[in-house]
Length: 113
Image (cartoon, rainbow, N blue to C red; front, top):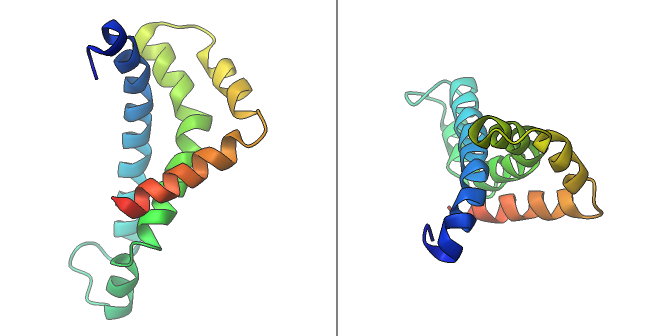
């Protein structure tokens, strides 16, 4: 992938991957903390957390909403010094079905992972 189209594709994917990682790591950490951490003794909480339909899809959908709306633009601005990318991402996500597609893709990816 880094050599595809002389690296231009990889440079576009990097800010998205960084934004997704920040959101996913933060949400997984918050869910784990809210449920008592890794040594939680509650069987019902552990059963819910091990269900990929709930945790995987839910966290994936959260990433699919939060990262494009709030992180892709600032990450691109800071990583590549591209002024105005936050406004551009808000414009892109304002297209019909852009948010829905992003959230559905995140949910499916979270379920698979």
